[in-house]
Amino acid sequence: MAPQSRTLDHPDRSEIRLEDVLHALSDPVRLQVVRFLADGGESSCSAIDLAVSKSTTTHHFRVLREAGVIRQVYRGTAKMSSLRREDLDALFPGLLDTVVTAYDAQQARTVTV
Image (cartoon, rainbow, N blue to C red; front, top):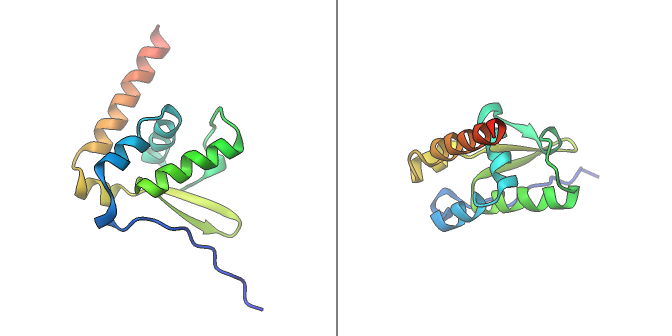
């Protein structure tokens, strides 16, 4: 019996909508995920230290995937995530860079306060 391939649904580039992306980016936990992935390329969900439960983490990754912000693929038993930077930069030039820069600035203010 051949192993069953596990695939996840992702919107095509043409289906990615700005309002869905902005909604996905409106949560601090999801911003933390995007910031982490902006530096690292592809990463497992467990590599990102989030202060929420496993089920909540799964929810946040699903919101990001369904909005078209990240791509997730299975590598063995690990679910690997990466930013859909090429798609998002083509559709909304500068959005990801602006979000990451704003997140970093906010984190810097939090640390110095």
